[in-house]
Length: 120
Image 1 (tube, helix red, strand yellow):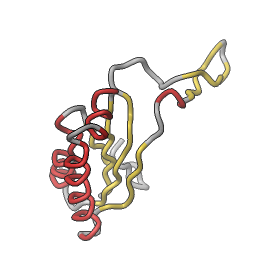
Image 2 (cartoon, one colour):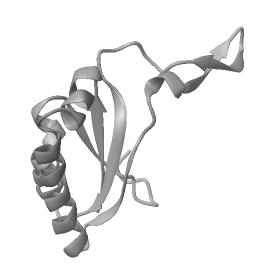
Image 3 (cartoon, one colour):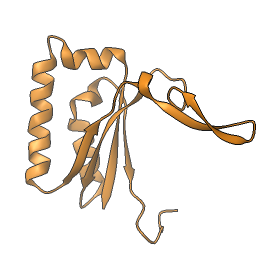
């Protein structure tokens, strides 16, 4: 089953990856990504641009309109994702727990819906 691991960031957590501890954190992340690449569990992963570049489509006066910013005001914002294909949800949770960001900000693990939509 495929799982989407959503990585949430904030200004402080992003600075950790570029600050003095950044090299160690990036090395840790590289080890995990290599492991799940080699095992065939990694489908894809991407970082997202800064939230200041985000636009949201929301209903304004009854019609969809483009507005500035992320969909909600919050301390954390969606900073990236990892899509994995794992045998069990526990394995997806293990991967998320080992991702360095999990020590600083929330990560969310969500199963993708199957074509039949049984998960609804």
